Length: 298
Length: 311
Image 1 (cartoon, each protein chain N blue to C red):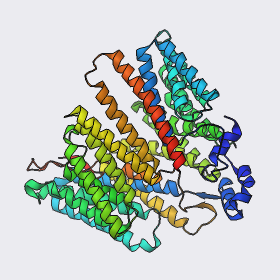
Image 2: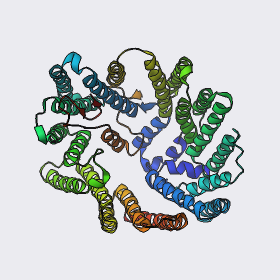
Image 3: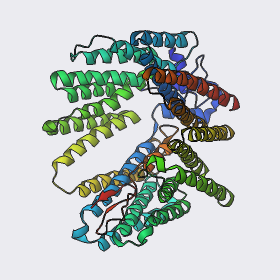
Image 4: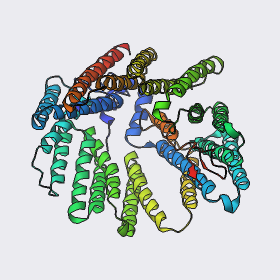
């Protein structure tokens, strides 16, 4: 056990009695919130149930039939959405995960229906666009950042930016996704003023940076320079919004791009190790410099 | 770093002024990034130079940073120390003896004690469990005994936060290390041991109200449940659905029972890390997603957010 009660007591004049008392109650475990545990249990429960639905669809096609399976999963998904909507005024932490379960069931069901009934025919990837739209509607209706992330992932899949696409083919889809997300963020900010901006920014930044790295497969120099340029923009954005994670991961992407360019054509181990050693020293120094500037800014 | 400075760092989120210490320290994201970059650099140095000299140089630089520049928990000096120690160990003559695992454990423990990094301590304990597995086929028991000792050690009031973090790391990581060494022939014993570990730590968690003990309880009962499910001849989807329903319904019932409580165990919003929301989104995005093959007419591959399959 760790108790910071003596330090908090000493800080009482600065913190005020109300805050100090609340913090001391927490230190003494007189008030102990199991909210994080409930979140983890809810998330695991929802994903296990969604996985069960996936196996059900996979293993019971002939026994139950595609139509009955599709309708059954759709009804379960609708029930989840309805439950969350019905309880929205007295929502508990677990209701978010019932909603997540509904969304995961919709994802599985739409993909299953397309595989069985070929609704979109040759343009089968449009089922991912449909999913993106459905999850986006859900995200706005329920103000859910998790559903928004599902919508963005489905949109990425529709554009061809997903785990199944080879990394070397991801350049154009990645930049398309980044551009769409920046536009979506602008519209969202102007029309709805939600709390979704940071999600759009992170997905767009990562898509653009991965797009740059992907371009390196075709053109090492152009891809590397583009990645470094995008990283510089993301770092500048991190400084502007005072959000350090942007700075950190953009910098790491830039280091990867720089090293890949420098190591291009180097076949012997000693020179490669020398380049990596020097670049890591430079990277540590650069990151410490950026962090110092960031602290000054804050 | 002195005890009072370690404790002061814990106050940073409450009062920035009180959290100031005469050391350079970093938050967890920057620390992890610098650790990885520095560890890659140390590895490159061992390739370039004599491994032993590279090891000594790394430790010397780490000590310079700690003593002269007052760097502590920055990620850099931690990577230099563990990289240096492991480089020196790799220079020892390899006899292939099982005891080499204990040498690695001692190295990780030494580095962990110097830079007070709880993960290094957990790595050291993991190698001890690996040694007992290799030598006596007792890896699971050893891991659970060490984890249980760490769980009980958490009941003590520690002055140094890093001691508390070491106990948390060992209590949470060792059961997983032990599980990686579990043998299918000993499934019933594994179930019994993990269930006992889970129930004891759950009891301690409820009695003494500690998040890490809840995590240990979840790991213990989770492993026991997974192994028990393997012994059942019911369809996979039924097992998954039952597990999911128990977790979701259980969480709902607990949150409902705690709804109006303001003292004792409550369910008011709280977070374990500053990144709880981001971690949840990242985990959700990482779930298996749409994997759809339209080429096959009589079916094909499909999937979608937590559910993939081929038929």
